[in-house]
Length: 103
Image 1 (cartoon, helix red, strand yellow):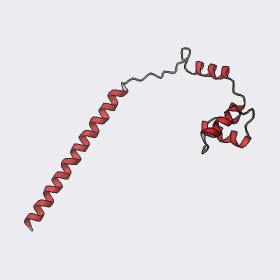
Image 2: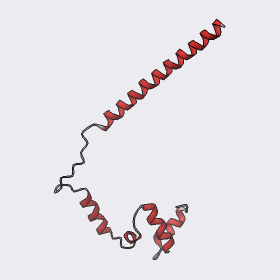
Image 3: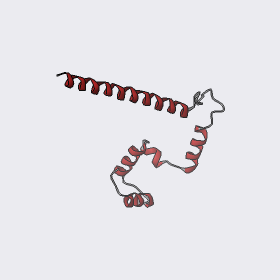
Image 4: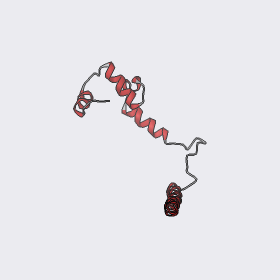
């Protein structure tokens, strides 16, 4: 938002927040201004409790793979690509040396 921590603390402790500042806060948080104006801790807790409760839905958010294994596969692929690139550069260097030697 481009404001200091001290200014944020003042906003948090004030009874009312200017509409312009409220618009900026809502934009940064990615929510509607009304969500901030009508905020209640109970509603927020209920939202997140329901958000994670998929017992009555067919929504399945379980990974079918191990993310760490996938990461290691990518690292190995990058390592192989780097080794091929390095070998290619060595071959180019040898070729240039040969050209200089022949001329």
